[in-house]
Length: 147
Image 1 (cartoon, rainbow, N blue to C red):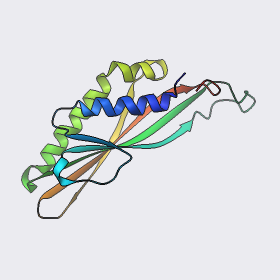
Image 2: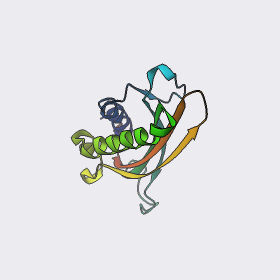
Image 3: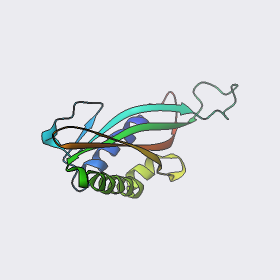
């Protein structure tokens, strides 16, 4: 059986690549070439185990994991419209992830990805470049010994 974490991350990249106006998706790459904007960067992020599992369970017992990849949307536009463009792409990504049947199927109890919020940042330059980091959490069942 394949690693559910990797399957979710791969699918996440495919889903975001299909979002209208996203020109490129990178995974674990922070280099942002202005020629490929708007782009999305997916960082694998962290994962934690559900603490309600008793310590006495065998190490190969299934565990509920929560993974929290980081998704950044980067755009370049005029100052007057950069915020609007970021918000549009943000909403498109949220909707695409929420509606994707394959992501839903990969998560525990078909919960899908939970949108947790966003943090934005703008920087000065010749053109206005804006970035928003989207936070999602995905719960899945890890079955040690079968991945």
